[in-house]
Length: 122
View 1 (spheres, helix red, strand yellow):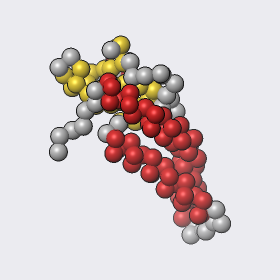
View 2 (cartoon, helix red, strand yellow):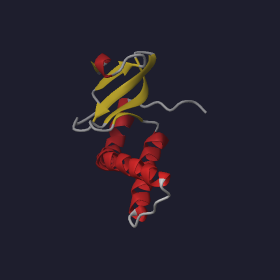
View 3 (cartoon, one colour):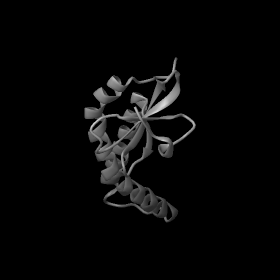
View 4 (spheres, one colour):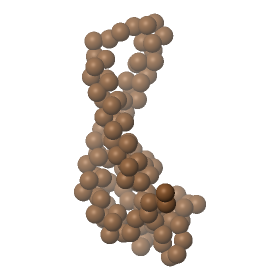
């Protein structure tokens, strides 16, 4: 299967779905890390907890959100800022369209071998 690539229009069309998923993921991600650490500590003592069901729901939702990003072919670069890259072809070469939460539209790109520091306006 060929790797998914996005045009600017396609990336912008995904933003109304992507932005809420990123906001929710950001809100749950730190809590999920705390839960993973707590579960690891409890596992050492074979301890149980009455909140295990809510922890499992949280972990499941984080996994679901990450899976959605994977299905969309979007690469999450930073959870806190909601920074994502859309695989694309720009100026005839493999590149990423670069967007983060709070930006009104996809307006930047960078070559695949550079990161955020290599961002350029479209």
